[in-house]
Image (cartoon, rainbow, N blue to C red; front, side, top):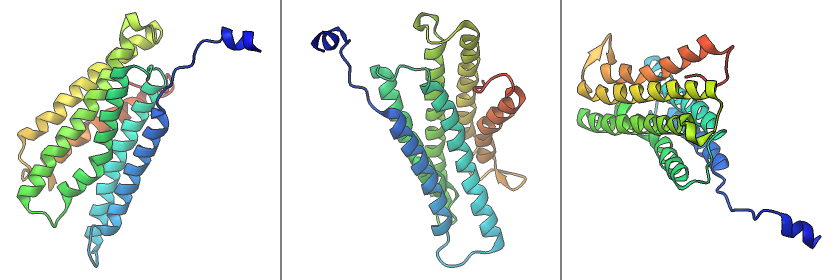
Length: 214
């Protein structure tokens, strides 16, 4: 018995980031759902209900899209490294405050100046989360890390490039003031939809070939 124990490699403590990430993503979705209840103080019109549902669906799509990419990355990445652990913590912090910031952006109780400020914070939050996911893809795509095979490595390089470009696009939304509209929709909000549409279109087009799409 002692010989077997002596031959075993020492076990190193590892953070349970997968469990924590699932909890935070789930909690963020719950917060977004709760906002549907408390957005209006007393009564709602049909237009209020429709707007609130659309707002929730936007947050839902951001979170579920981020979660799909994130969990795919974490299935490959060695999370015990300091850099990966740090980026995980930062990403989960950004994810946790997405519902709150977006609620402040679209709240009809906030004056325009507050909505503008909240939209800037939301843009930075959204772009930051995309950037971290791009860094994860970059680490996976490095040949010296030997984390994935050659074909998958090439795919992760495309994913890294796409996420990097989407990060820049989201940041460029700040060039449009919050009170700019197109077809009755905030221009900045339309730009925020670009990463979501890009991911799901690409995923549906290439779904038969892979579970993780660039």
